[in-house]
Length: 361
Ligand code: GN1
Ligand code: MG
Image 1 (cartoon, protein in one colour):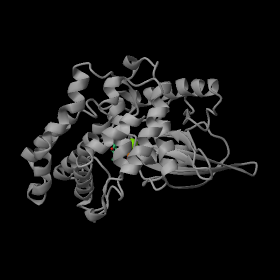
Image 2 (spheres, rainbow, N blue to C red):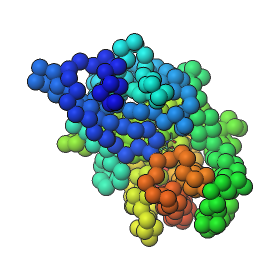
Image 3 (cartoon, rainbow, N blue to C red):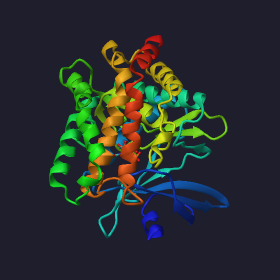
């Protein structure tokens, strides 16, 4: 099957091998190895998640437009557009993706060789570079006309809407899991006040709508395997109008946790404030002038809000019966939710430290 799907894209050579690749929770990712005249080349093939993304046409349109724009920018600033930016490979019919007989949708990209992605931020210097490349990403797109982008998942980071979806799930209690997560449900109610902070500021126009990545989990940056330099921001499915607070917040959520997102032993979860400083320093320097005072004044709260939101999303999906995120065992989403809520608690006790750090940069 994979061979047949791969043959629909504009690549030359003979397909030698393919294997599962990466750790994403949404799409299925496969690495393809081709050989042509004794030279090996690798590509990424992805089956896109139709439940999460009902409008793959629009999603791919965003990606193709934005990567085309970024590639030109990279050339101008002396970077390598094929290494510092993902590049979509067209289908033989010149499409952005291929739909198979079952209605599943696939896309292909060039593999960026000699890079790795980390699920945990172990090295301070590497993590600062991660922050910097996410800040630069927003900077490079600063002049991109934000209203020409499709809104791929409406209200994706609208934390208030996420809270409403959580309440709807509890009310429906479709798979009778409500009784197994009472403490987590209470945690959400006790912290509901946090949900409105970013949304209200955006609605009031205090902070601007920008082109943002919206999924700045640290494993969405490819790092050079030898030098540790940040090479390329990947997973552009959710590029759309947003706030830079979302991107900062998700970087903090994923990189300042001392434990994995799905660590079962929550006592291993802690908030690493030193890592916070590294990411903040990198992110702010990557943004340059492209941050308003009002945004900067809220940066210290962004990690808390996005971590709470992510925990609410995991909990909602657990209550709904695991219909959104990939899971490998029945409590997987609940376990993920617990690490997020523990991290929120740890962060809440360090608000003033975070504020003082932001003020330094
Ligand atoms: C999903 O695709 P991936 O694994 O990078 C999710 C993010 C969550 C993240 C939590 C489209 O990201 O929003 O923060 O899982 N992506 C989508 O790990 O929902
Ligand atoms: Mg993703």
